Image (cartoon, rainbow, N blue to C red; front, side, top):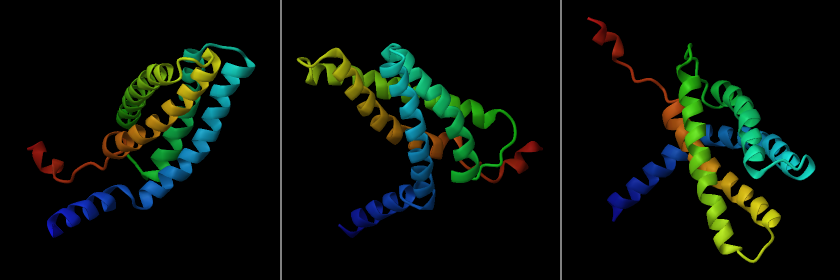
Amino acid sequence: MSDLREKIKSFIRLFFDKTFLKFVIVGVINTLFGSAVMFGFYNLLHLSYGLSVAANYVFGSILSYFLNKRFTFKNTEKGAGTLIRFAVNVGLCCLIAYGAARPLVRLILSGASATLRDNIAMLVGMGLFVVLNYIGQRFFAFAEKKAGKEGKDA
């Protein structure tokens, strides 16, 4: 039983540290910005669900990349590697989160109006996206490079 407790404590320490707190701060800023874009596009400009979600993640991802690279993960890697990994991560997270949210909300709220279902699906998609995105950014996009690659140049 104590072995299980240690594994749980280790898991919690791995995810919930100062980096996580910084990610949450950046996430709040980015979520407010992206939500304003997404709901504004959908409700004020009357653009489609897909275009509204896409605008959120295009504009929000640009802000997120720079804030998370420098502030959250303090990544100093040069070149396009982090940008490519970041873009792949955001794309996959978006497809998974919003791809699951819309049909799930349509199923649960089948009697509601399309506008209400789409707005709730966007909120659910945002929640799923945040969780997946943190994992992807921390352990893929901005992961620290392992030491020891220098010796492999021989």
